[in-house]
Image (tube, rainbow, N blue to C red; front, side, top):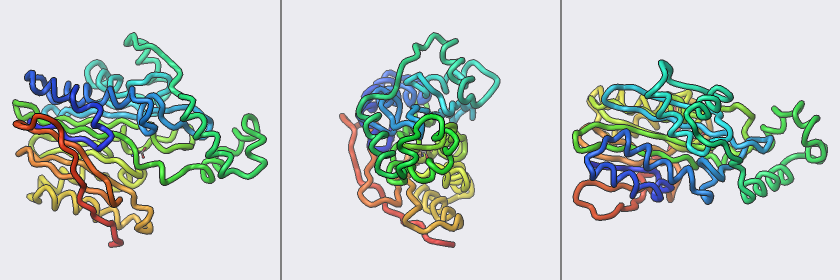
Length: 312
Ligand code: GLY
């Protein structure tokens, strides 16, 4: 058994590991592990307390995938519910669909009996206001409301902060029966355009699991993982016989073809192969990840391999 996560997943490791230890499924474990991260007000990249879009609205994305059945569920731009991962899980379980977005996702959450709430905490609101004041010209700052809504594209270009896209939480588990599952949850880019979806809810971009080969999940600049199909690429490279680390490196190498300067290639990934070997890489120095496997009394936090993206 193994549970691996981005470093901000540390607060969810105990909940996920308890399920694996009790003989539960990897799918249950990754959902349970994600929920404490979504409820953590100090994590401004996920769930309750996440940084809002340019209008000050918290919009959440999440996805979950069962590597055994290849079933998946996802939600995008969900407002007013702190546990998008559980809404995504119920999309997987209850609907003949893979993804719901916006009002449809919120309606489904309400139908499930989940309680709506305001997800914008005072610290996240203060950071949002400070970001607008720090980046938008005077006419935008005095026109939040009517004029702002007609200038959203320009305001978003000025206000979005690439330094704040490196959050998001990833979990991948393999249970005692050898079944893998993966989960990703995020509040996305701070000051994003309303309705923007990143890679986290896109199966194949930010999240993919297939028990014949392995699983991968991403954090970082979601637009890049969408354009390159990054999580699915790792699994595809495994399918073609690459060792796990080589598969991760190859998927990062593919980002080089997107034509961005290396300093804009902010990407991190955790991955697992079908033998339970794990790998965590990042383009960003200093990044860590957490994991716990059979025989370990507690999770360990380790540095990721640093793999810069260069043009190809
Ligand atoms: N990777 C998260 C996002 O871009 O929204």
